[in-house]
Length: 279
Image (cartoon, rainbow, N blue to C red; front, side, top):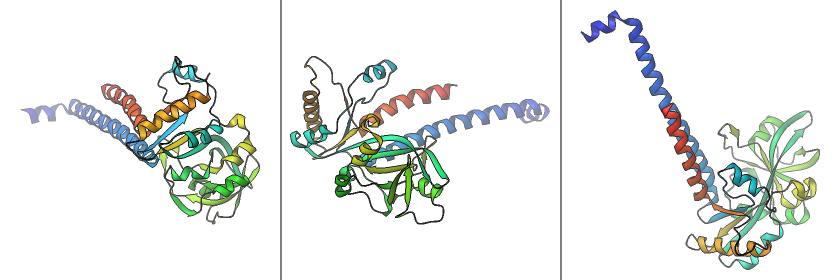
């Protein structure tokens, strides 16, 4: 009887099947996309390692009001890095980095909105960097403010198609930089190209693009996982003293780990997942 009903009512049967197929496919697609995004972010954050934490002006902000309040805070300073190195007993390595979006070009070819990162050479002692060819910039490059760049594969593919980029010159806002290294391809995450970047010495970044474009992040590596909490507390005390924060006031900076970022992302995606599946 059921089979006869399906054969007689072909249109109704087809529409019902179509509804079920679309519904199930939508749920699978949504859940897979969110899980893939979370896994991609997790993979990226693993480069920080379990003993690393980051200090910046904002921290992990989850609301508009909190973001507006954070905008009133004073930016971090390069000098804080030396103070942390000297005063934090449980900190093994301290580096600083700042990021900005600029145009990069070679001859008539150009790329807009390229992430330009200025960092101290010891950042690679804290954050894992996958090198495909060439080298990273060194402490000497930092000291001499050398105009050298470690670039992502997108720079090579778009500006040097079919050519070896090592030793070639790119222009970042019409300022010439020599390519000394190329990163391994990472692909896209959440629709954003992760390979469209150029990393240069922090000293050259500040000189060429001005301190008003720098919003530095301080990367700190604790001596061990066990000493991570005490290292974070020591850094907090040092920065509160340098920034003259009264004892009754909250920190005017943020300190967070990769685990804290993943926890915040999981909280957000949990509600997005439930909402989209409901829809």
